[in-house]
Image (tube, rainbow over all chains, first blue to last red; front, side):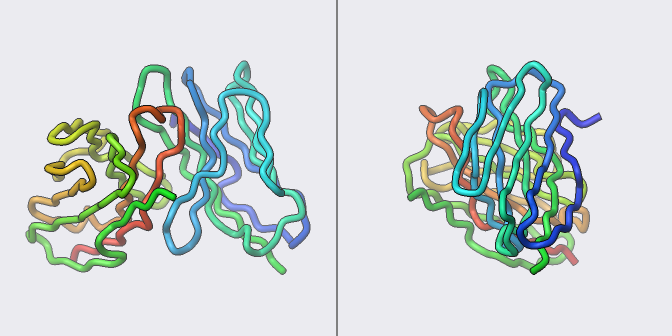
Length: 109
Length: 114
């Protein structure tokens, strides 16, 4: 079993819909990252979380440390949100990140 | 803004060739990373370096080596390329004081081994 599991693997939605992507992990962590990868390949960081909730524009990320679970929400989704969203965790005392396999999001106009 | 530059976006090489993938960052970051990304497997760490001339194996180092002669440059070397090394390769960097901050990624190199 992977240490970081994401769901769903693929998600297609209509423009304007509220989107939720989930990430569960099985190890103790010091931080969780949400990343976005557009079709060109480059990866950008959206959020880094160690507790609670963060918001940036239409994106909201939450984490529940006790339940080892994080969600990424997108409000009023738009076709430009179409990308692969990747969850990654940093374990205590470790420089390395462990990545989920990603969720491919497609927003249809 | 941090810039991580990978030398090629697309590369096609033949089996048995020695292949060099170059990565340069402009923010004086101590830590640099090489990943490969395959469908259904996510990003997997090949090697990382926490300073000049320092390197550590990641999760899948077999068939690869690295070189960090200067702080800004981290090279990934495929000693004798094989078809199972066809993949997307991503370089990243991060400052030592920013251990809980995001890594900064390059745009990736899509490598095909024929």
